[in-house]
Each structure stands twice: as structure tokens, then as C-alpha cells.
Image (cartoon, rainbow, N blue to C red; front, top):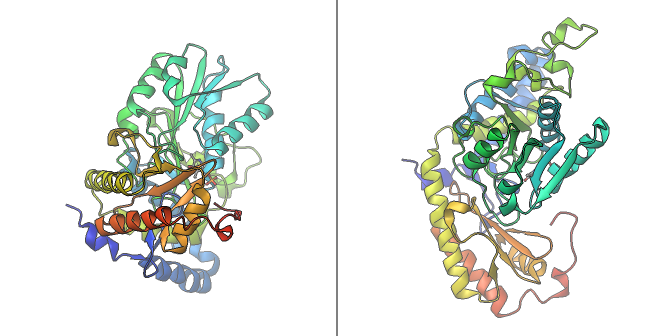
Length: 397
Ligand SMILES: *Cc1c(COP(=O)(O)O)cnc(C)c1O
């Protein structure tokens, strides 16, 4: 059984802060500071270029990929780290489209995170083969799976509402129609148990700086199913995905298996921070994490609905259909969130009117949830949000 009181001490959170935004940027594991410092001073500083071999830098994207693999139900050796999630979405989609040369439809939903759709749009334009992107209501996805479908590209958990797709069911439906499936796990990895292998996903992608706590700008990951990983053709054919990067051959030959999804030089300092975060994750039972996350989310919903009648639940009421976040609608949600942050309760805001709260059991407990709801009640009852200081929007909301 995971002891979630003990995990709290493994994170460095400023005193007095209740952090409900780990779904956007996870907090710093205490061990990350020393781990990154060691890589800087002992490895980079002393080993210089020999660090690539002697400190194992070059092997990190695969080694850490496997540790994330356990959290997302991947087979060993099928996950690699690198680049940003936007790039990994494009990379997976390009490969998947190449595997369905006779089909022209990419299906997603209109709740998907914009960058996934933007990257698809850009790829379609550069391919110039007449692909169409259909974005339908999340509830209508299954009805739009037809024999024209090349790729179903979805994010399991909606970044705004926390609504969760049924991965197994939609993957099966897409496969029955002869299509391939890409799952974006940005709000799933480290938030709930994922079973990529069990549901038969073709590709999976996600980021590490949200629930996995790798720090700002931490690298993304990509999963390719074993049945595809030796044949898939990487469109982003960078030298580190080559079969012999240091052979410096003039033409591209894909590396073995998941290696081919690497592109360029790995971000070693970011990987060091991720390694410290994964030292925590290695000890976490994902089923226990999920149970705890549901308890906390249900408690928050009940508390907020009792204390703040102005707020309207925007997340599914059924816990099974939610990720690890809870969202409420409020017309002045931006100002209300700023007022809340000024009082030490950190969530975030997503246009047009969503106040978002993430529940990460590794460092959030029941007392935090009750306290957050209490502060929110004060902000609402006393209209503390109704202050010009809280209306000016920052670049990052
Ligand atoms: C957070 C998020 C991203 C972010 O992409 P980056 O390239 O890492 O900035 C992409 N897709 C989804 C679904 C996300 O939630």
C-alpha cells in the first residue's frame, strides 16, 4: 500500500501553499535539486563529453522511458523520451498516416488540446495529400468511426473538463474499422492507471512535466506498440533515431524498435530532474493512487457545491468518467482564480470560464482539499474576486 502521507515529504512546496495545479506543472521533488546539481557539476563539469557514455546520458531516454512505461501499461522497451509533446503528436500522426496510405480521415474531438489539432493541421498541409481532420463532440467520436478513417487521435482526459474517454472501447471500434489509434496521455500519465498494451493502442504520447513532476520543459514520451515498432517509418528522421548515429552515413536508416522515434540530442539536465521524479513514481501503486485521487476529487466537489452555489460543475459527476482534475464554471473565473492564488490556493483558469483544480495524491491530502474549499467559499461570498487587480490577464493563465 502506498503511504501518501510519506510521499508528501518528498516534494518541496512553499509553506502555506495548497497546490492544485500539478496537472499543469508538477511541483519539485526535493531530490531533483541535488540530482540536477550533480549532473551539472559532477557530470557535465568534470566529465565533459565523456558523460555521454560514462554517465549514461545517451541511454537515459530509453531507460527512463521504461520507468514511465510501467505507469502507462506499456511493454518494456516501447517508450522513449525526447522533444515536446507537440512534436511527439506530429511524429506519431505522420507515422500512422503512412501506415494507412489509402485513407484520408483523421478523427479527433473538439475538446482536444489545441496544439494536437494545430500539429495535425500543419502536417496535413505539408503532406498535401488531401487528408481531412474531423473534430466532433467527444460523445460523438464513436459514431464517426467509419471505414474512411485512417487515424483516431484522441486525448484520454480533456484538459478543460477532466472528461475521460473509454480507451479500450474506442481503440477496439477504430481497429474494427481498420484504423490506427493514437492516445495522448498528457493528463493521464501519473494521474490514473493506463493500460496501453491491454487496450491495444498503436501509439501513445504524453508529457512529463504535468503529473509526473519532471519540471518546466521536461521532455515528452512516445510509445509505439511492439507489432509496429520495427516497421514504423519515422517522418522526423533525425540522426539519433538512425541505426548507426555515429556511423555518419549519408542516408537515413531507422534504428531498432523504439530507438527510431528519437530525433536529436536528449535534454540531459531535464532528464536528470525526471529521474529524481521517477524515483518517487517507482514506489507508487497506481490503483491506490487512483482510489485516493477519486476520494479527494469527490470530497472537493461535495465541499464546493455546499459552500459555493455560484460555481457550476463542469466535470463529469461520475468519477469513473473523470481524470484527476475537477473543473467549475464561473463567468468571472479568471478573477476568482487570481483571488484564490493570492490566498495560497493555486489552481488555474482555462478560457472561457473554467476554474481548474488538479488532485495529485502524492502531495495533496484531505485537509488541503477542505482548506481550499473554505478559501474558495470566502472568495465567492465576499466577492473578493471583484477587484481590478485580478482582472489583468497574464501571458500564462
Ligand atoms: C499539455 C498538453 C500539451 C502540451 O504540449 P507541449 O508541446 O509539451 O507544450 C499537448 N497536448 C495535450 C493534450 C496537453 O494536455
